[in-house]
Image 1 (cartoon, rainbow, N blue to C red):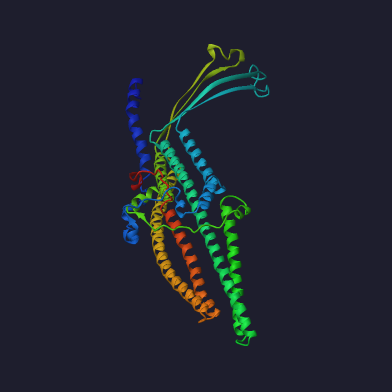
Image 2: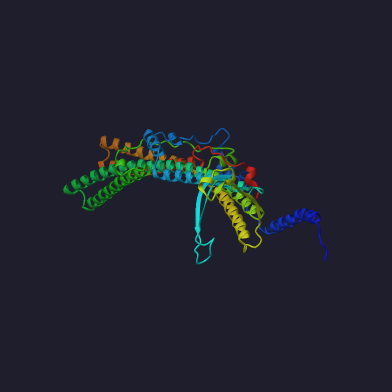
Length: 493
């Protein structure tokens, strides 16, 4: 039998350890084979929108201001939105989610730092004599221990940092979501306010139509009494009066409903809506978007910026999952005092030292790590798909708002021309009536197309204001948001 000297054994062990460690590392790396994400973020510059935007894309155009709603020209609306942005339940929910994400990032940051804790313990034991004879049996012994415990896991492969960076990305996405909630709230209030303005205009037209129909009814009744006409015209006029009254009631209900909706958006009860006065005639600025809208939109649209942060977070999540395949080295140490007699606990002989490093590597885990990495890859692909979808949706919404505004401007111009003609016809009918060349029936008949044109204009002006609000929202509502660099989201991990 051959004997090996202790010194030769130590040399062999020192030479074998690096090879063994390399084998362990190779085994850990090989287990990630075949797992990789498949998604890739879309380059915004590849999504062309210049032809769709047409002359609305101008080099001198800028993104909206943060208080974009002031361009609509109604001070009451300005006050309502300012009131809402000071705090409503929907904003409180978004802010709470921000705090949740920030706390989660704090936990991830704490997990990658050393921890130190203090402990004090006293433990006693008496072994029954029925189990062990004297001197062990029947004797009570106690030990008091006071110490400091140090624990630290070395981040050799960057896994702990990746988890922290992923949590930070999610926190930043939540912060952007909170800004998106404010943009959504302001646009909802502005849209409801436009609906309130339209309802008041519809009520005006309905009241004017009811007055016209009642006048027509009175004339019809006079003509029947004079034997100049039959009762058919009276019945037609009665139907017109009832229809106009119904339109007035519907407009009144719409006024109440829009006031209630605004009050709810303010986080208040329905009575708050009663204090909202009739809106002024809202302005609808001509549609204009920056010529560099495709690329610059990335830093203004909250949903796009939040999606980019989630891509960044998912990218770090993959790095963290990959780090789980590699060895981990943990350090634990305890420095304290221990003594069987409490009086001796603080003596020089009571010093207690314990600790050292530990290395571990998963070998058989039933596929847990591969499944975890596959899930991280899927999370990344999902985040990329949502980012790409949000980007294309953002451009579509801008183009839709611009084309809608252009179409409505053309419709308003046509209806305005028709209304001018109806106004001229009504004026002429009045002149002929005063000159004795026409009748009141002619005047009332000429008034109907005028009121119909007024009704159409009220609806089109409301739609045009809504298109302006939608364009402001689609362009990001004047928000300037910090987002990840293009390089971090342009390539898969």
